[in-house]
Image 1: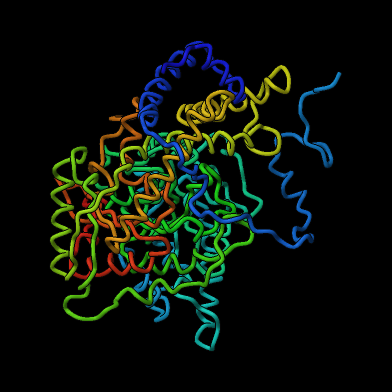
Image 2: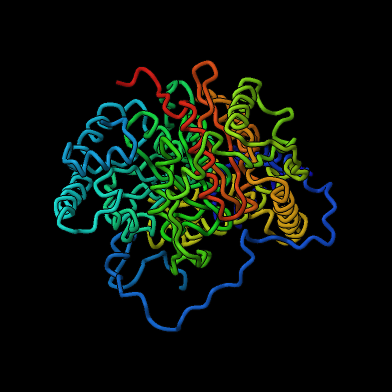
Length: 95
Length: 493
């Protein structure tokens, strides 16, 4: 299998990463090399094998439904690029 | 003083031979002198470190009158810059987090603080732990103290170089596909990746959540045991943390006594680790280590991990898939890098991520986004998860025949800076012997087993689930009988 430049651009768009034409071209070469490695998997017959998502096949733990975190808004907002009051500022999305 | 092991340092502190402030200052001075060349530390904050050392000295002074002083009180430790530490810049080796000062502590950091240890600084690493040479760091490559023209390994390359260059007595690392074991091998350290779920991942910046695990990097198995005692334990803040009784990892180091301390131990040697692919000089040292183990009473048995060769392909689907999801949080909105100019919200995301991430991180995000995308999910992600099961099953079968598995940690000694940087696939193959352990979630170690042309090689020890104490015991017995772990690079005085 071999990716096309168009697929690289599309997946970069899905991942919200801007790529220049030159970058897309060099990325294409690298990704095709990596996918050639990954393709080795395809020859293996895995019918009937249960997919393993996780090293420990445990059910998710539940906790008591009570407030355990304290409000640290000021500390968390101190590292934000742009804020106003309690809000994080981003470019206008609704005209 | 700076070359002593943790137990000896603790003794020197208890005996008032040196104070924690003085000890911390010794390392800080050495960092100031040698770090410009080695580049092991990204952030050093002498005032913060010394404040912790002063507090430790007070605890030590009070300790005599019945205070609470554990074996790490006053010991300076280097922390991989993947662990959030309150008030410390925490970059994960990325421009994305160049300006990020963490508002909270990772559980590992909080545990070391509670144990009285001193945070000596944050160590360099491959960006978001994605790399095997430490060359993907935004803050520049780390140099291997054994040969500064060579890589220290990665992704915990800064931690490895710091300990190897005596800039710190020990350090933390994290291991997603070999990132503790491979740099430990390349820098002559003892490194341990615990069973998945033994050490909390809370506050440890996520790469591939089902594989990431933190562990110690030090000069001996004995030191690793002390560090793991402080790091391990259930944490309700990590949904995959395991609820199990605490262990004393130091207690079994010397068991059992006798001149054949490993009598009855069955060491499995997978034929897949001993075929082609490993350099002859590394293989020779691994064979010599196995001969030493036989002298100590162990028996070696031939085993097979038939799906081993599929671990690299499966890993490079699973890890990027998880990474693409984890790294979607870096959007330039709540913290981290935001591009200076953009047209609209989507453009802000795309430019912030394009400028904030380096080339390798972007590649992995793109692979992940692709294999998870509509129409490809079954062929890649699901197939990789099925192969993951086959690999884990191979280990389950193998541990019916042996107590511990051994082989090389890395197929070669440290390679030259730049040698593999242009070819991702060659770089990925540096981890052929370590990745399967993460996929299965097993504990693994690397211990020094000799020098080839003046460069260290590592012996990998793989244990069954929760076999950390066993691995440390098996490593410690070897280190009592040999001196490879005490070898140090020349020319860094």
